[in-house]
Length: 229
Length: 218
Image 1: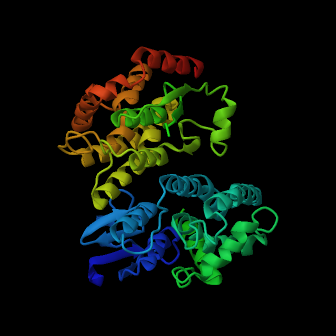
Image 2 (image 1 turned 180 degrees about the vertical axis):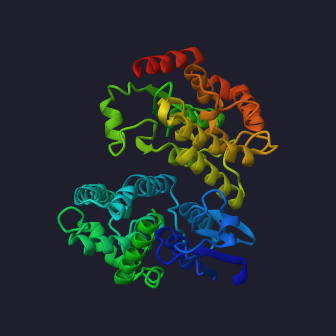
Image 3 (image 1 turned 90 degrees about the vertical axis):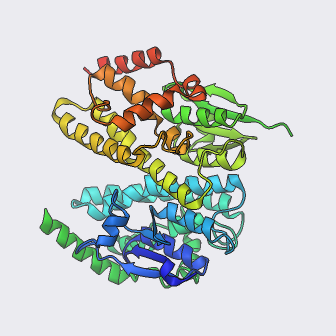
């Protein structure tokens, strides 16, 4: 497929934008990447392609825009069906992967946002506690999904690996800033080991942002948002 | 092996009814277990320890929770009468609208109806924006699914039935034929559909439920 047929609007700082990029890598699909500098302004193409949310990522395939990161990942899995599968083949395993991905986005991610935007120490501490608590169920989830293999998806990275792994960049920024270990030996030994494997995977390696660069970006973003208020 | 399908639900819950509608549309037999949400059963807590909510589908002893996850599972397991589009792009669009509804619309409409005086205007505005977006997506289609009821219609059924009852009880005029003609017409069509109308909660029972909540909030 011609590279120009597949375009992804994203941002290097966005964990959500990383998801479809990992998926496209798994499928060995050539695509054109457009970096959105969302702190500055959103492109016409982004606003036109995602009028409802005006957010990255957006996949534009043969002129058709697809929005929402996990919906894009499922679309990629279904369209490039000859490549390695991203979702499991068994419907129950698929439901389990979807369940935990929804958990990460709906229940766990808000506590990460709460920390990143917290001003007071108390609020930061509360958010950290919530983040830590929210990660604990993933220990059991890993056991169930991986069935003894290296990744949530089994031998190769799959839907849930992508859904959770995209947050490792920001997770590391938070760990460094707070002097803590959110994924740790005591409560989440399996996800801790998995995180190393995921980060080194060939479909992921180049996409995970450098922790220090991301921390620097965070400072810039915080300054800008404070200035805007 | 005989198939065992059970559904833990609650009669008034739109999330629970979504699953019943989907199962009925596909002709799947199931055992229904009514949950008292003030006094959740040990089985529910065992099958959905993370969220402790209905609906939960139990298929041959394996539990699935979260209504959209269940709807996807139902579609993949029972192939009669597909409710998701077949084309991957159309399916991505349907998933988008189902998510938009669940993340934004349903809650906005619910909150607008229950909002206190000082927050009412803002909440109504937010809800209206959501309905406007839905109206724009529906355009001149009979259903979100096209000519036939599809996944997005089932997900958005809260607007077509529950909201219309609720707004009457609390005295809000969120969904009216003047403000949202296409959406209003869709709501009439949807709740008039044969299998759908038999699987909605009894209107008068819902009114009693909403009235009780209104009274207790005063």
